Length: 143
Image (cartoon, rainbow, N blue to C red):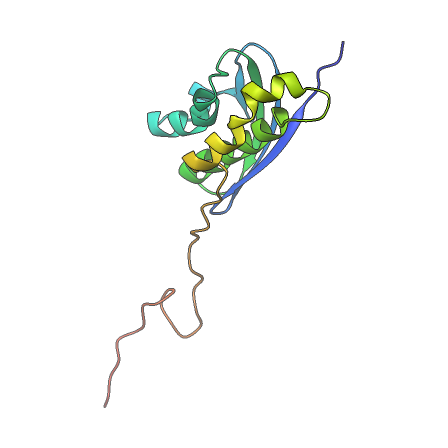
């Protein structure tokens, strides 16, 4: 029997995460490594597993993530958004499963209210020509 995968894409700063979800035992693999091995900071691990904990699916879904770009914090944010998007698609109410829709209809709303579906658009401002950085200038001399 083949597993049905649900896809979600997450972005944060310059990081992009491609997330696949399927029914499973609660395994989280990031770039073919365990969550604990990939993210050393506890806050990053908590942020990645946040959407799953919010929906009480810790032992019911397997998560496979490919993430690239940016730093650890940005990658954790991208992973969280990707997982939230995939969960929303996975448990979206459809015509065939009206009975199940009653219990799972709140997932999208829960994730939206917790801020996991919203992209954090803050990025580093680009350096401008004639300047030292994005805003800092060289010392001005009148004479």
